[in-house]
Image (cartoon, rainbow, N blue to C red; front, top):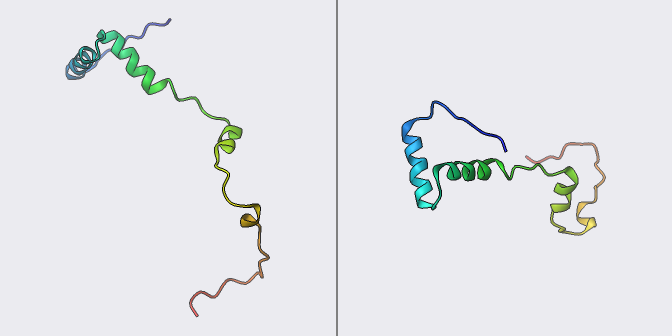
Length: 78
């Protein structure tokens, strides 16, 4: 595993990290790892095929059929 060293952190943030660690029953280092894993761990990008497969199956094919366009703009203000 790699080691991460972060410098120049505001002391109030460090104190909040320590308090959060105590509240979660972890060391500050373990809390830091958990925060990083939560923020960055689940960012796997889905493939286009996965996105398409996740679209719900709604409606019938006829609902999405194209209609013949007359080529004229509709008159909506008459």
